[in-house]
Length: 146
Image 1: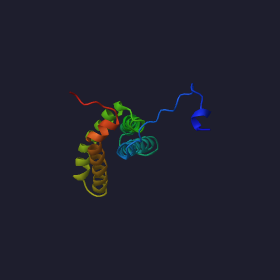
Image 2: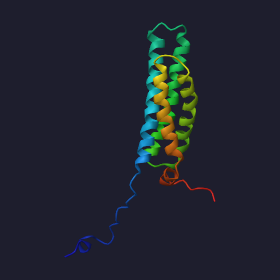
Image 3: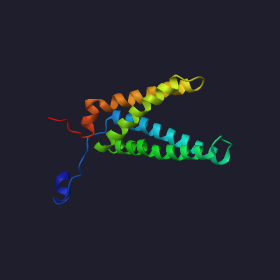
Image 4: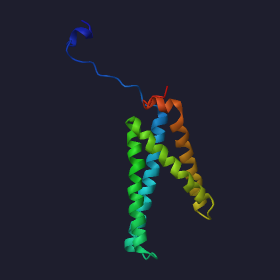
């Protein structure tokens, strides 16, 4: 008796999706890392604005809330990348492009901000490179023009 005889004809076979390329997982992780850093920075600014003694508590609170709101973009993009949604590539690309002026500013500063700029540059450039690769575009189901 074969396995085909045991399966009813009306039972549909599960649809197998191709395996998720590791580059998409890498880009999603890097994008989520940037989103988490924005959220943590925003929470820190918000708490310091509420509990600390900044020069302008209102500015610290507004900056913190802004960073938390901006963190939603890369976090949503990372989730979309993990689910292989084609729309997620755009916000992920924008996040990486916006990170480049931040990298430049950090690298031109002093002290502990320079290593932070180097790390952000590595993360952003790696993610940007992976997002523009044809294999990634194809894996996300984005059709090329023409």
